[in-house]
Image 1 (cartoon, helix red, strand yellow):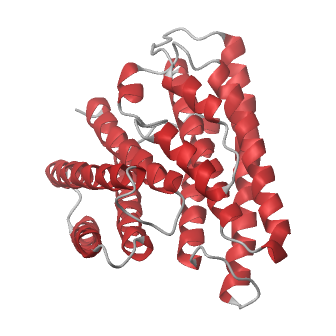
Image 2 (spheres, one colour):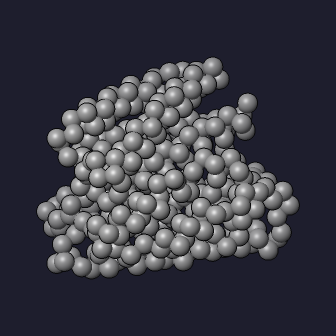
Image 3 (cartoon, rainbow, N blue to C red):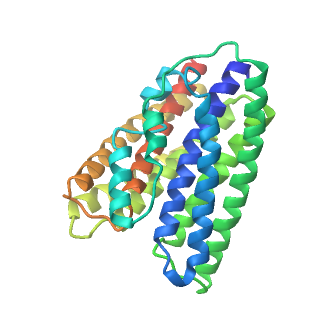
Length: 308
């Protein structure tokens, strides 16, 4: 059973991370359709607005309630988020709430060990709202990808990218259910989470390979090599006997690999911002990849500290 202070921390971190992720997914969806599919563009914009409103609620009590380790891990915003938002606005003609990002960058860390009953009740209510919202967004994405794969709809986003969004949001939905029930993690759920995030990193490497200008052969080759490494790691997760020693070995390998993948993504973003690299995707999408890698590493470190 989650303690009240853990419930507050995890509710704020989980929702601020995933609600930003969905808003950035919505930007991708908005930017990937022709005008003859304006209804999808408008629906994506509406979901982004609703996610923004709910995120503002969580942000209103985030000061002094998110630990320093989480904020320093850059799981909500990165050093590149604001510049990526500015460039996305410039190139894609979308409006992004950069003031929200500035507020997140200015968050003051803290650990509320005795949260009030009012705060607990607020978060319980908001978590239920978030659960309904993400469920509706999953249905929206499912509608898109079903139409794509039956030749009823064209989008510049691959069906595999929309499936990725659905998987990401499904994990968010499951985490919300865990928070609503105030359930703590156990060794099995930790292993499942590690496996899922390693799958996500593999998928990101595939997206990088498919979205970069093919003339940048070094980027293509390095993305491909990360795909191979993640394939091997995922295979080992599936075939290695679950013992404390093996679990630690797999976790250590995940940490080492995601740290190298982080460095790779940072270099990509830096080169995009400096006009040295070209992707057929909005810059904020790459920053979203980095944020997720940061979040994965944060979860790995957190699990180690909670289960020494």
